[in-house]
Length: 141
Image (tube, rainbow, N blue to C red):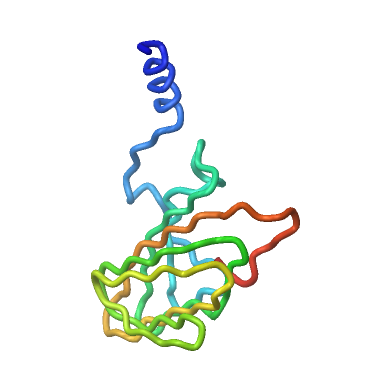
């Protein structure tokens, strides 16, 4: 059993990371407008060992938004830290503020607008689901 722990610890050391938020640049992804920025902190493309998880912090300036879009094979959670905005989930509109969170299932159209007077800051956690070959995302991430 001691050997298993040693192997596990060695694997964890290769793929584990502790990073600083300031290491990451703000990006404005396609479909995001008027100062809707994100820092992609963990993703399969940027983080060795990450396969299904995307974790980012987003900051939307007043008037910023992401257009309505849906993900065929992804689940998302938005957790709001600062500011206020309007989250559209399908045909429903919901005000979001700090300590509000939303679960967004696959295929549900969603959009987010900063309707407040300061920045709308929130975490986005996205996980890919098992999907058939050729299944694609619709719209921006």
